[in-house]
Image (tube, rainbow, N blue to C red; front, side, top):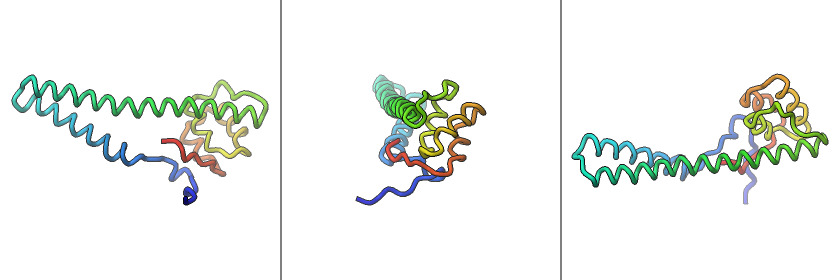
Length: 143
């Protein structure tokens, strides 16, 4: 098995082709087509039924992504809290937001504690946190 490509700010976003480029566009197209069919074509209970099913598929696709992301956020939060305690012996600063902590996960162990302090004191935006990381700690598991 090949070694994953080194991760950086420029390439850290991950796409799951089957979800992002197949399921999501198909669900959106079907949703729009079902609306057109109900209101522009001949209205019938069958067209309304089709719209309902497509609406459910569209909502399900959105919820699947939302639930997976929320679960990953919770996991990252716990991992980074634990990592901070391991590295410093102290809990993470309560001023850090979840989005900041998620961005901080990319910082190496050497720079993580100092960057946590800086982010908490200055209220750094997550994107700015990621851009300020010099030694990147890859996360190839997040989707």
